[in-house]
Image 1 (spheres, rainbow, N blue to C red):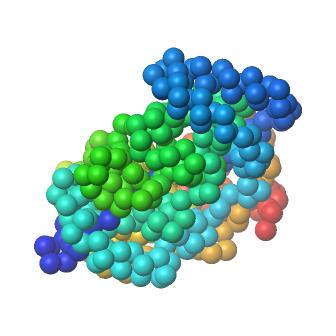
Image 2: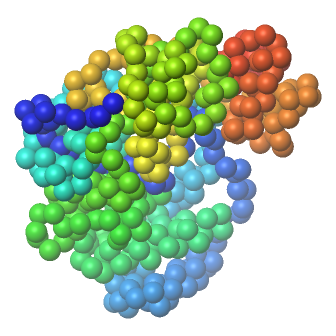
Length: 416
C-alpha cells in the first residue's frame, strides 16, 4: 500500500507536473465548437491595446507591457487547435500503450539514475517520490525533449481576444507578462504549448507565479533552462495539492467473477471493505485490512484492468481531469520504479467512438427508457449510469462501458 523505496533503490528523483490545460483524454470530449467569425486585424489591434492597459492596471510595468504587446501577433494556428475536435475518442488501450511503453520506461529509469542527487533533494523537501516526478515529466514533455514552439505571449493574446474563453486567457496573459517583468525569461524566449503551458513541467502562467521556485540559487525562476527549478517547482506544486508521500497512487486489482460493477461509481470504501468483497491484488494476494479509502476504476469495462485508487490519484487528476491520464502517470511511475506490465492489459479491439456515435448511443438509451439527459456526445456519469441500467435489464455485465455488445444491442454504429 505504501509507496516507499529503500535508500539504495529510491534513486534519482525527477521532475514534473502536467499542464492544467492538457488536452482532454479518455472519455472526456471537447466542448462545443465555437463557430465565431475570425477576428479582424483592427479588432485584434484594439484588443491588444485593452489587454496592455489591463496588464498595467494589474501591476505589470508599462515598459514590459508595451514592449511585449508591440511584438505580439495573432496566431491563426492557435485558434485552429483550440477549435479542433478529435474525430474519435481514444480507447484506453491506445492511450496507455502510446504513453507507457518500453522506450519511455527505459528513459525514465535512466533519468531516475542520472538526476539522483537533485531528485532526492526534491523528495526530502516535498515528499513526492522520484518515480512519480519522472512519470509526469515523461508524459508532459518526454523528459524535456519538447516544450512547444509557440510564442506564449502571442498565443495567450490570441486566445484572450477570442470570445470563447477570453476571461481565463486574459488572466494567463497578465500572469505571463508578470513573469517576464520579474526577469524569469525574456519575452522572445518564452515559448510553450498553443495554450500557454511552459517549460519542463508545462506550468500555466498563473501556476508558475504561485508555485515556481528558484532552486538553483541564480535569482530566477527558470522552468525552461534550469532542471533544479523545474523539479522543485513540480514537487512544491504537487505538495500544495495534498500529495501524501507515504502512499502510492493506487494499484491494479482482480475482481471476482460475480462482482457488482455498480460499485465502480466513484464511491470510496476502506481497503478492508473491498477485500471482503473478494477483490485481491493483481497477483491474487489478499488486500490489506487497512482503513485507507479507495475507489474502484474500470477504464475499459469488465474485460479490461481494474484499479483501486487512493487520494494521490485525486491529486494527479487535479492537473488533468482524465482518469486515463492519472492511470498512465501512476502506472509509468510504478514501471520506472521497477514494476512490470499490467497483469490484465486493456483489450485492443475496443470501439473508438466519435462524438456522433456517443450522441446516437445516448438517444438510443433514452428511447428505450434509460435517461441520459440531453444528448451531448459526452460519455459522462449520467450516460454511464444509463448504460449500467440497460446492461442489467439485458442480462449483461453492468459495468457502464459502451463495449461492442452494448452497441450491437442498441444498433449504434461505430467509426471503426
